[in-house]
Length: 113
Length: 111
Image: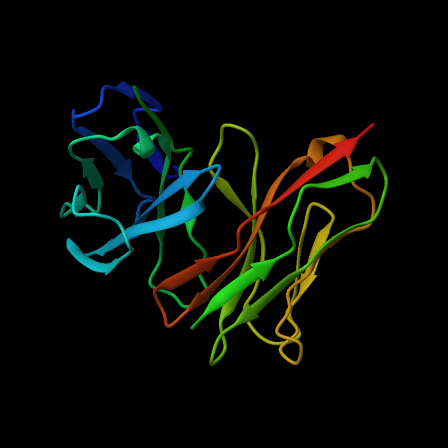
C-alpha cells in the first residue's frame, strides 16, 4: 500500500506570495491532518479534515487554510507569505479507529525569502 | 487539558549504551499511546504503539510499556546504534480524533 504522498518536496517563495501544498493520504484513510514543524516551535497542529469537512483547527492565522476533496486528497494554502512561515509542512492520514496512529508523509520544505 | 511531556534533549550516548527517553501524559480516560521517530529530512515514522494499560509496544529493539498508574510511556532500548540517531516523539490519541505530541527528544549516538 502506498504511503502518504506530499508534493512538492521543496518550495522557495517570496514574501507576499501564496503557496499551495498537496497531500494524498493512504488509500482508505479519510482523515487528513496538517502540521507545521520548525526548529523553534516544534510540531504545531494546523487543521484536520474528514469527509471534506474541517473537523479540528489549531491556533494559526486565517492566512492558513485547507480543503479536502471527495477522494480524501487534501491541499493547504498559505496566503501573503511571511518569513516566519518557512518550515517543514507535514501531512498525515489515519483511520477512524481509536487505536490507529497517524501516518506521515515526508513533508514539504517551504522557504520564504 | 490533555498533553504529553517528554524529556528535553539532546541525549548523547555511546554506541551500545542503554537508552531511556521519558514520556508522561495527562489525559482523562484511556488514550492510545505512540512513539514516532524522525530522521533528518523525513517525516515522522511510527516506531511502536500501545493501546491499553500494561500493553508493551516493541519494534526494532525499542520497547515502551503503557503505565496507567504513573501515566507514563517511557521509550527504552538496550543497546543503541549510530543509526538510531534521530528525533523521537511521544504522542497520544484521545477523544477519537485528537492527537497530542511531545516536543521531541533528539538522540545522538557516537561510535
